[in-house]
Length: 246
Image (cartoon, rainbow, N blue to C red; front, side, top):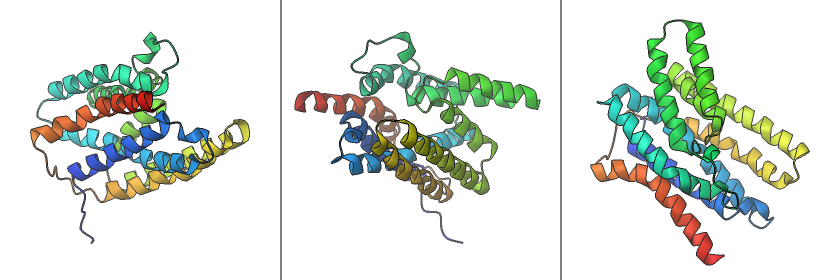
């Protein structure tokens, strides 16, 4: 059997690099020009790594955290301070409104974490199903919307190698179908062609997760908090760069 080489530190590093490149594509509108469309395809491809890695490590954190209360408070804090930076990423030309509050990846992860707590307390299938549906509705305006909560649930319910393979393949197929529909119905067909390529990122992230060895890896306090802080800080930094350059 091949040695599993990736620990939690490696996966988090891959996730934030993918996130950074993906958000560069969004902020600098690489999908709007034929010249930058290949860059957009790459940014979307590596962007597919980020949330699946975070969702999988959320499950790990839920299982092994010393204090679920502190875990919830940490997620809540970074959700709140990331609301406006995420708004700047996607809606800079529109008025900020209440619908922008549950908008970023920390909200999705926070809702996923709370869902898992109640999920374990409910004993019947109907109750569990209604709970998941409730949290799908709660995150419909958030980053990764319904796909985020469903992915967290799938990783929790099927937390093994087969579960990872099947889940990532299903997500690959779903996003391929969405891209194909977009090609025939949307005006920016080039972006959806790029998205067809980008969906392959789900297959690669599946490979990364299958090679996760379950170890924390390099994890001093500044690294732990640095990964959280990177999210709002890099959004503000990219927006500032765009403002001063363009």
